[in-house]
Amino acid sequence: MPKVFDRGPLRVVLPPVTGLVRRNLAYLRCAFALVGAIFVPALMAADWPCFRGGAPLSVSSATNLPIQLSDSQAVAWKTPLEGKGVSSPIVIDGRVVVTSASGNQEQRLHVRCFAAKTGEALWERQFNATGRTLCHATSSVAAPTPAAADGRIFAFFSSNDLACLDLDGNLLWYRGLTYDFPAAYNDVGMASSPLVIGDVVIVQIENQGDSFAAGLNVKTGETVWRHDRPREASWSSPSVFRARPLDPPSVLLQAPSGLTALDPSSGNVRWDLKLKSNDITSSTNEDGVIFLPADGITAIQPDAAGGAPKILWKQARLNPGAASPVVQAGRLYVVNRAGVLSCAETAKGTVLWQLRLAGRFWSTPVLAGNHLYLFSDDGLAQVVALGEKGELASSFSLGEEVMTSPAVAAGGIVVRSAEHLWKFAKPAE
Image (cartoon, rainbow, N blue to C red; front, side):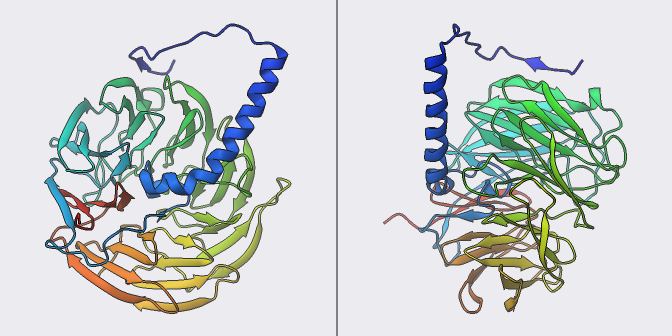
């Protein structure tokens, strides 16, 4: 039996409904789905609920972000962080949530929450890791980025511990997945971030041992489905894909051997593409086309009828390093290991321009308005103006290592450095 620590979430039992009520509920579900599809861009500007912000991935509709980043013009607040972590911050309902780990073996797990407006510490919760905490020196047990949905925060760690808390930090349930799957670990630590789709939170635990993905019930933590994965290490994170805006979502799982699409509610395989792929960066998508880090970048289009995806093009010049690609409005942006930013058109993969930036990048950039915001490993923030060519608009050194991806929400950019949490925003007028 799975180890589930349930702190008594509210359960409501409704009486049976008639056929007429069922039909009306079905109509309402369709209407809410349409409204949700229409208003997704507006919501993306308000919150940043998971790694890369959900869909559209690493893209924000915010229009009021600062272009010139500096202490005097754009640092809204800066607050110290204790412990070690390379997980990215998320922003939900006016709160910034980050994870970290402490202790000689990083066996103490932390979830911290700050006010997005002021940087004030709101609460902190701590747990003891139940699984393996060994990881690479450049990483941390706090490597996966948390996710949030419907008033719940899902904090996942390399030790395969998953804590579910409410927005005030109260523990709702806790899963120590190593209890159920003791051989689930890789040699240098896990880093894949959880993803919430509907009633399940999805974790991707790919390693040389017991390798799998699982969908857990968001209310109880119980396993809804488990899908065996290749026995090979991967640090890519699951992502959401829809061939058309109102189509049912698929969850994409990327591994060194290819890309798989699952039904997120059941774990059933919808299609599977065998193609040697990057084991760190994650795919992105736009207008029914997936841009997979494989052979540089490979553009694939799934069959609307559910058949095998079709490869549209491959572009070896678009070879991402550790940062995941970003796509918007027919343009694809990729940063390679040498710090060269490339822009390509998505129709054929033709490279339109390249710009050499300073440093190397683990952090995935974010795109807002007509600017791309990038943070190098050594903490240099670089803002690139986009157009017929890319131009460096400003740069600013945080003075600390940055191995995490920024969040765009609450009127600014929130980014985590080695020892601090920062928010960049335009000064109040």
